[in-house]
Length: 206
Image (cartoon, rainbow, N blue to C red):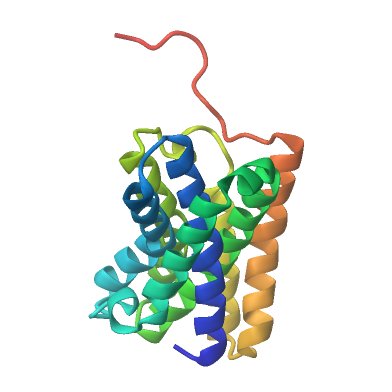
């Protein structure tokens, strides 16, 4: 993966790992549990993507930086969680940044490994949402993407834009900026305006 995309990947891992560690703190787990949730959130989506596209060993196991970054984020959050907790809205914003970065890097890497446009866009979405899904399952919560929040859809849109731009041989930074911006703005607007995905109405049939 080119150096620019690696940098974006590591930044996304850090902010995702912070959100995972904060969930662990609020679940009253010990430092090991906080570190596990930080690592799972930061690395889970990319790990799943790499296994599915045949990029083995996954980047999380082949590059020491991919293990150091979530460990640092987890420890910082564990030690300074009172401050991080008071900044929850900012953590949610960081999470949106992580989602936007991951959907772009995930789609781009999938294209590099020979996937077509549609599978590559889906891999970009998976990279963005996979870690959060694993975090919520480990923490005993319903995954955020199933609770009506507009989360996966912005990630898929950002990944699709990255795929189209890459296939047109546009500059990497321009493609990354365009795809990440669409995902980020959509996600932030959804958080600000309270936009929700359609949910079932009325009593469930039995």
